Length: 515
Image (tube, rainbow, N blue to C red; front, side, top):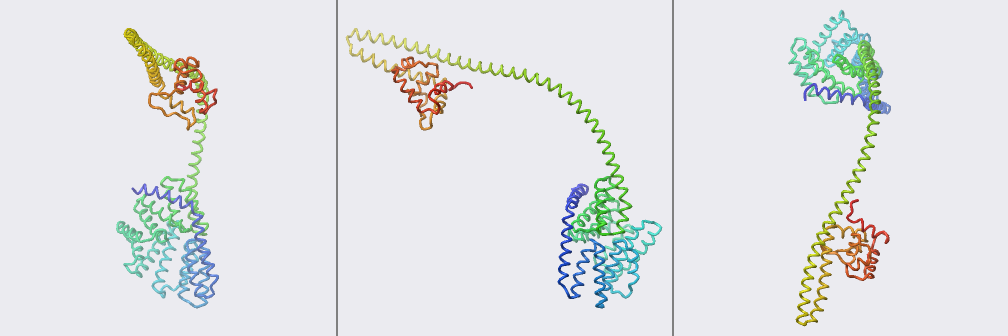
């Protein structure tokens, strides 16, 4: 993933973090509240000094007035107990907070009141760092080249002093060294040190945010815009998560995005930076933002005005298009309705024609089968009659009258059985699903389970009814039953039906029909 795509992804993450600002603020306030409650239970002044230190650390970049209050409380206790170390520590803390909040005169008074030469080395280093930060903020605050150079010189003198106090292997020394390397144009060496320091920091900590901010400032000097944005965003995310209100990163990012053309985000971020500065009560930061915000806000408002102007134009064009579209659609609707009615009428006629053709096809199939069946049976029965005639003559000539009677009886039984068999095959060929559909009209326990291509007596009767032979006498003659037998079979089957008795034959007639 390239730096640019990483930056885009991080901006979205920053927007999400910003949307949760109130959550991070609650966490911070809860932590401070817990410390204050713990302090209320203490009576020992040494313990109060210690817990005040923790409260000061929480307030340092959160609310400068509150940090000042607890620093002064510790200063008073230290003076009362004559604890010189705590007095020095408190004065250094106070000068730092004054420098952050823009109270430069008060900070300078504290520096002047302290005897630098007699301070222990670790306090000297702290003193130097506070002075460096003092001049950094003062240069930004006055924003005047006439004074900036002399302040810059003094700042670098204090940097020389602190570097002389530090071990050249310490991280603090290396941080200060990067400034010297940058001033001499050794940007690769400075970048290597800054990246190493950054990688050793734990994410979501103040040290991580500061290391990211130092890298962003470095890439601003080397004109590596995307890398500068990337580390500014990392620093801003960490500041937001820690509820840091003295958030230099977000302000710098807003200015950077403004120059990059992302006016919407720049406007949003500068507003948040101003809210945080007001919350922190940093007079210095308020004045810095006051110089930048109108420029960003004016560009943002111009963009909004341009968008509104374009929107009005689009609205007019869209309205005209909608009117034209309504007229066109109305005309098309009328035409479509007319075509739809014609299609509907044609579809109904076509469906009727299809149904009629299907019924005709079905009728033709039935006719073809029965014509073939009839012609074949005629031929068969002519041949049988011829054989029967020969056998009768032969029995008469030979005087075998008993055989003649037996032959005629056996022949009739055989012919009836053959008639039933042929009828079953022919009918089931025409209506292969007849038995299944017939069973669907009966209760489950009363359904028929027959061999393939075979009907029983009851089903033959209803097969003839399906073919349109409804007269009981005709059915009886065809099947060689008595009329009463036919009635009995019909009644027996109808008693098993799921439908009313008088509707049963109508349902049978529908079997195999095209619905």
